[in-house]
Amino acid sequence: MKSVTALELRQSLGKVVSALEAGGEPVLLCRGRRPVAALVSLRDFEERFVEKAAAAERDRLIEQMDALARPAADPTPSVEILRLARTGC
Image (tube, rainbow, N blue to C red; front, side, top):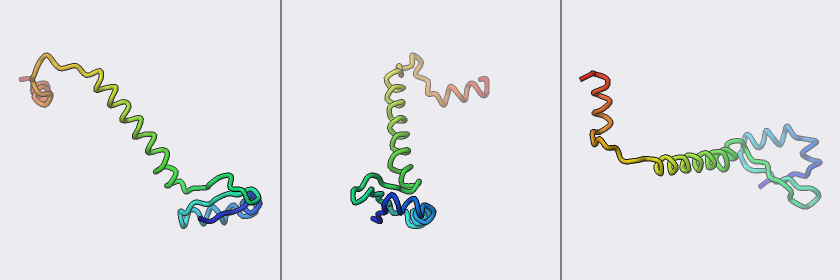
């Protein structure tokens, strides 16, 4: 993993961003000799955080809907009900 200091980042932000876009390898940001942050590509960020959060939210909503679902009094399959509604017969 490549590392840059805060001063190097300020002086060559464009170069660091271009390298991050091209290679996708995270960049460790150091203040002095101490690591303080990591820069990751947008693709990595979305894969690791955004998509996971969305999947967790979808799973939570599905669980809520399943908990609210009640068995139908009419055992007619929904496909049959839709066919009847479309044809009127």
